[in-house]
Image 1: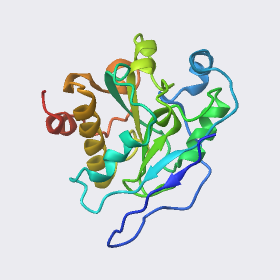
Image 2: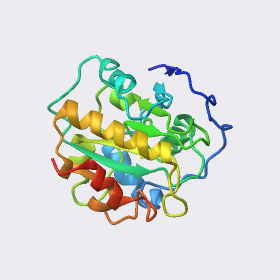
Image 3: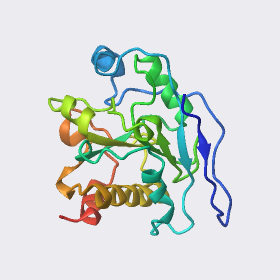
Amino acid sequence: MARSRRVRSTRGNGSAAGNRATVVWLSLAGAMTAVGGLLMALDGRNAPRVGGLAMPALAAVGTVGELEQIFTSVPKLDRNRWQAIVIHHSSGDFGSPETIAAQHVRAGLRNLGHQFLIGNGRGMGDGEVHVGERWIRQQSGAHAMGQTRMWLNEHAISICLVGNGDQQGFTKLQMAKLMELVQTLRAELKIPANRVYLHSDVAPTTDPGQLFPANEFRARLGSN
């Protein structure tokens, strides 16, 4: 079992981590029950192995030094596997790696279905990046639906923003950290901009939510 460990950085106003709260968490497309069988088939029904590396937000979110740990935390980076990135939301206002993983386990997954989580200050620090076991072990995810779900779960890195993008926008620090993480992964793995997807781009869902700033995100992402 991979043990969680946290790497703390000094911030002017301290960590914004909220209380651990029970999350009434909907599925990746708002219908986990409907796709539970599919996810079980993709992922198996092994005992939960919740863990990973959690990194709090940087004081200056435009810098990259801390996020380089996502590559040194894995035994061997599988460069041939990772060819795309998919952005999700958790569908709940509150969430932590433990509560979201517990929901995934109850849905039939063996652990957290995403490779990365980014907190919103409610259950995780605002902008805090959690590096999940699937990334540390370089394992496929269990996050995507739609016609290309098999390929995406096998070859796309899942980044999940804690929050419900259909009800409320994400925090500035979340969005800054998302862009930093996406660009760091793209640079290291040579993933082109046109293979960075919102879940709604590849599946019949609103995920990561209608309030996700898609146009701004794509403009900042660039075209290369």
